[in-house]
Image (cartoon, rainbow over all chains, first blue to last red; front, side, top):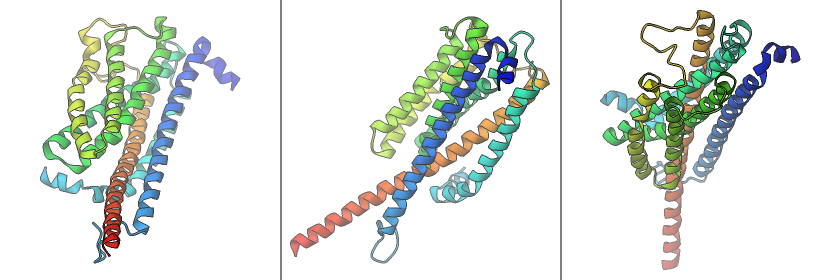
Amino acid sequence: MSGLIDSLGPHAGFILVSYGAAALVLLGLTLATLRDHAAQKRALDALEQRGAGRRRDGTTS
Amino acid sequence: MASLIDLANPTRFMRFSAVLLPWFAAAAAVLLAVGLYLAWFVAPADYQQGETIRIMFIHVPAAWLAMMFYSMMAVSALGTLVWRHPLADVAQKAAAPIGACFALVCLITGALWGKPMWGTYWVWDARLTSVLVLLLIYLGIIALWRVLDEPLRAARAVAILTLVGFVNVPIIKFSVDWWNTLHQPSSVLRMGGPTIHPSMLWPLLILAIGFTLFALALHMLGMRAEIMRRRVRTLTILEAERLDRLAAQGAAA
């Protein structure tokens, strides 16, 4: 690891922080999107299980 | 156009996206892994910029995607305003946070590349300022979606703001040609072909395609979540109305 950092020269810090910040932002975005998707799916499943939106003839709105 | 609009209905989108999403995600993971390997271990250091050239491999795709997602949002805004297509504003809403994140990555990596090369993290030149304006427009659009509760009303307001803000995209692209900027001119997407050596161009292109597939996979996931959110909203309202009716019948009896 220190060999890799040494090979990046005097500006290694700028390069590593760039990649770290990009990874952090994109990982955060991915996790937020996955969590939102899972939350909406749970809420929809719960509503459909309760029969919300179902008319008396059994069809859905 | 009518058949294209018919094809892109929410139910069909949910079916298609469930199939496409894992393929997009897997292809993105492979291309990003290959691209990062080439960028870190195969591409040489630049003769002028040294090892800091490695920042380019994430900075440039981030800049492209920030503009691409805004352009996609502008097309969706037309879909909302002209055809009132139900999937257009879903696509627009899901694209905004993704574009904003890539604009943020572009600004952060640009600042970290600028300090060792230019001697400063930031300068108010046309390219840097117009990308900052793009990020602010993204944040404004995200805020507007949150302020207005009713999705269709919010969609129209956001669509107008998106189209007005689109004027900034060509300004970003051509700012380095129109004004004297500290930022270098285009070296890939330019008349006369790229000026980058193939040993750096290939990793850049592979990473750009990898990041694009990753962003499109996230966009699909975000659209799926938004379609379900609207379904949840509709069902919750219907459920509340049904309970109201039952309560009224109970009171009458």
